[in-house]
Length: 146
Image (cartoon, rainbow, N blue to C red; front, side, top):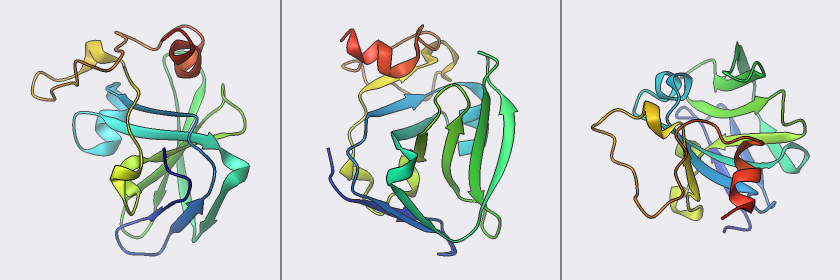
């Protein structure tokens, strides 16, 4: 994994960086990730939020997840680029959108969640651990089993 991640939005109003090692990198095919990404899935880079430095104003949209937790999706108010999300059930964690990284190859996905909701045209990597829904205990717990 990368030791220095940088990224931001399309228009440049928001930039971020972190030297924290990602704790989890995964694809999510839930309806909310599909709709907020504009494609078949979102790819998220989970890391400690206090290790993330953000410049610019991130706007948040809150919505409930299947678990009942609140997911706060952060985006640029000027260009609409998805930047990060937070989950009330995972306090202290931020989930960067891999699509917002300056170098998207700096991370490697480790798993797939909500695979049962993937559209047929969004082909999944058969070598990654895949879960039909969100695994019990969340993605970090699932990866501990693999």
